[in-house]
Every structure is written in C-alpha cells, then in structure tokens.
Image 1 (spheres, rainbow, N blue to C red):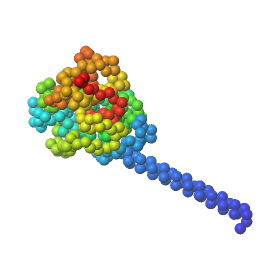
Image 2: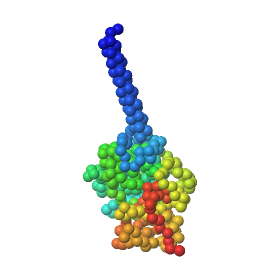
Image 3: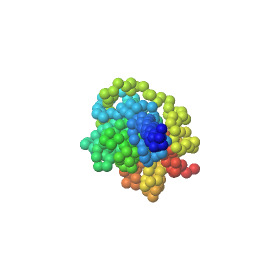
Image 4: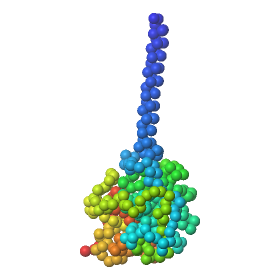
Length: 326
C-alpha cells in the first residue's frame, strides 16, 4: 500500500472515530435529557429559581392527582356529607362565601374556580397542611392550574397549563418556565371547622362531592400523618423547636417573616396585639376551632398561611417566632 493510501485510510478512520464519539456524546446527552424530563414529569428544569436537586418526584405522574376544573357547589342547608369537626377552607369575595372541604381537597389539591367573575385557584398541600388561595391571574392573563406531581420542601408544585411554568404553593411564585419569577396574588382564606364556617357564613356554598372523579371522600388517605413527627420528603431546613406538625400562622410583610405557633397563642388571650415589620397588627386565635387570622390596625384581614411548623421553617429559616411575655 502506498504512503498516500495509508494516510487516506488513517484520515477516514480518524473521521469515523470522531463521528462515533460525537454520536455517543449526543446519545448520552439526549438520554440524560430524556431521563431528566421523565424524572420531573416532563417539565423543563434547566434553570429553576430553587436548587434543581431539591425538587423531588412525589410519586404520582403529572395530573395523577387531578385538579377540579369545573367545580359544583351545594347550598349550606343541603350539605349532609360534613360533620361539625370536618376541616374546610373558606373564602369570601364580594359578599359570596364558599367552602372547600379538606376531605375532598386531599384527593385533588387544586380547585380552579371563579367567584363573581374573578378567576381564583384554591390550593391545598396535605403534606404541609397548607391551604392557600390565589388570584388566578398571572402576567396579566387568567391561568388554570394542575398538580405537577413534583415537590419542593415537601410542598406541592403547581403548574399553569398555558405555559407549563412550575409554581411553589408556599412561595406563591413561579420557579421555572416562561413565567419564572412571577408571583401570584394571595387571597385571605380561612382554614377552620365546618361548624365555625357555617356559623359565620350561613349562606355559604360548599364544594360538591360530584367532582367527576370516583373517589371515596369519606376515607382520609393521610389519617394519622398530622400526629407523627415523620416528614415524608426532604426539606432544606429542619428545626426541633416545635413538633414538626405544630400548626402556625405564618405571616409575610415587606419581605420579613413571622410564625405564630398555636402552642404559643394558646398561652395568651384570644386576641394578641403585635408590631411586626413596622406595622401594628392583631392575631385573632380560636383554640376551639383551631384557626386564626391576622388583621391590620384598621381591622382588615392580612392574608396569612396556616401551615405545619416544619413547612414554614423549611421555606423561611430566618423567620421570627412569636412568644407571649412571661
């Protein structure tokens, strides 16, 4: 074989090796990308606001926990599926009161609703004990939301169906996708007993069990969870200052955070005056119905979050904590 032929054969062999290496790299890259999408239920997480490694698959696939998109309601007087002690999330907008039973939300976590023409989304995370209502308008457009099947700090990540951006429930913020960084406007919401809500709002409407899904709403899939110290998924910050499932009223004002544990509120009067972030506020606590709210100096309710202690501290490790004076 001539020298030139050897050189040509060597060059062709080199090109083959190069093409093979490129092909192997592309296969590995695409396989890793496909695995990443699969591991995150098909959501793109190229540059999230929170550490990607701290976003966990919760078990169900995307929409494996189905949101309620066409909610029906029952008049209070006709409700026969709630006991006085059953927990509800209650909201009042423009004089219209609605209640969303937790025993239904345990199976759906999201209700896309409309109140007097205003799009709202009612969210509930059973793992964190957090019921939060938001205006469903983001970036100037009405959105509908689903359950991603992913968790951050053990809290549900919602996604909007229009852009597939992922939203942290407790942060109220999109952490990935085209709307990354956008925030949802929180709406005041009560987390209380059916008896309490019914007594306060006798004409309330109540979310119907006719959701379009076959679920046994009499069975609590999280029975016993609230009493255990077990946290089912990793969280960034852990504090043993209180029982992990101690209920707190969490408040944010001007980027500062404060927790009002039920255990501390129970030691004082039903109404506590406080000054936080330069604002005079009052915390109204109802030990009987295990609920409370925060109002400003003018008596207007400030949206707050009722949550398990572990969830609040995981998101807000620098939180202040209320303790009554000894």
